Image 1 (tube, rainbow, N blue to C red):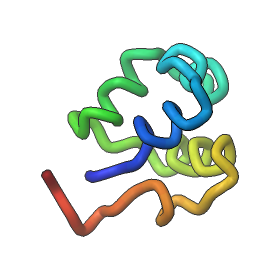
Image 2 (image 1 turned 135 degrees about the horizontal axis):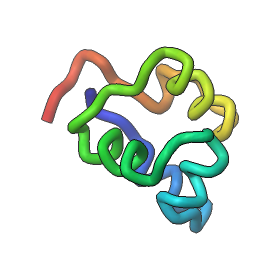
Image 3 (image 1 turned 60 degrees about the horizontal axis):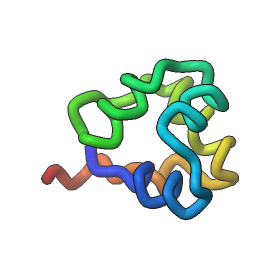
Length: 66
């Protein structure tokens, strides 16, 4: 699923490890989501949205694949 994680993370100057720590997941999990190799669970999607102060729909686009 397409997402804006890399863009949002970079705008805050966070590393993948920084974001992973804020979400309670591994850096590898963040990398897999950013590269669209893995779709996050619903609880993780809500956590990511909360960390960025956005809605899930503002971060993830389930209708488009690269």
